[in-house]
Length: 516
Ligand code: BGC
Image (cartoon, rainbow, N blue to C red; front, top):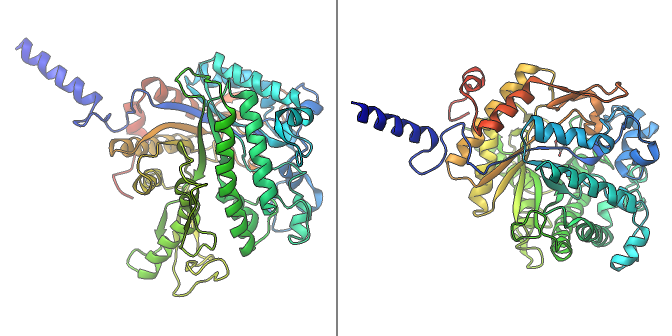
């Protein structure tokens, strides 16, 4: 009897830890799964409690201009909050506090942030060559500050994941106001100065990798390039406006997409060439990825052929056209579905960062509604609906990348809930999304980690402080910028500690069946 009991216990213990094929059961994660949190420099660094503004405030980026220029704020259509950047949580000063929370309180093993190009090179690098010439114009205090940040992460067991371009460009590379007012006549034109920007951003990437490669191994060339295009040149909306905030600039959409794809490849090469320091001792000095907001699409009415076709076309135009370029080197410059293979772009992706926030629901038309963009634009932009409450979409996003680009490891580099003060909504969001991530892993997807967006409340681009994503709350008017723990942070810490979603949280919050 005792033997039978023992056997039964052993069997149930085994099935609790692993499925037949060795995958962990639903709601559990592989032993080496990487848990993290993400922020971005522009959104968190400023607003320091005591540091002098000359050190804390970065006035050198196009985004600084975009969110602070009184005329842009006053103008309809830019959807700018007008919140001052002093509202931000002061991470440039309080980074050790934040890493203590991430590592000590949450038990995380990785932290994602971005380096601001404008902090490293406040002045133009055009015409300069080689590390010495670049060093002469670089802000070496900023380089030292970033080094201190990454060392502080490492000291706490946090692996730094470092984004080199998270939306912002230095002002010497992009005149946000000038281009907003006159896209043809402005200068410098940011991503539209294709040759210049591809060359200069690669120089910047190589410089940073040479300076900081001994403390950083995981690099991200760009964050959500399609958001730069969508909110900057195609459909600026309340959701997101990016500088220069111009609508329906079809030719520019194509130019910017091509420039960003080329920039990724050249940044990848530059980082690989310059980073010779193996910071984590795994035998590899660098791993370079790109972060993309993968947006699964759904037909408004699955029974209507035109809606189904439109959903396929949007999937291509918003996701695959860019991903095919950066992952396969298949560049579709005209966005007509026909790509040219370029060997100088191919094979440059060590892992893909997947940001997941929403699915898109589309209604089709029998003709191209935006023919100047693409013959494939058969969707109706006026009924286009972003569905933010679609947890199973994270599963779809992972599966659709896996099916098209097999063997490419993925990490969820962002996923988060924008109304963190809705305590129950945020807790449910976390449990439901992680349940779907665990299902994707069970179904064979190579997803190696999850970074919650965001560690603390921060400056949500055009929304300023109107949206709160933090595991920790920050009152923008509190001069000390104290961090206040939210219940979702406590849930996250329990999930991380057990490497699984605890049963009580699953019972309370997990509603989803296996399909939407
Ligand atoms: C961006 C973040 C942003 C988040 C929430 C992503 O688009 O990478 O910077 O704050 O989504 O909107």
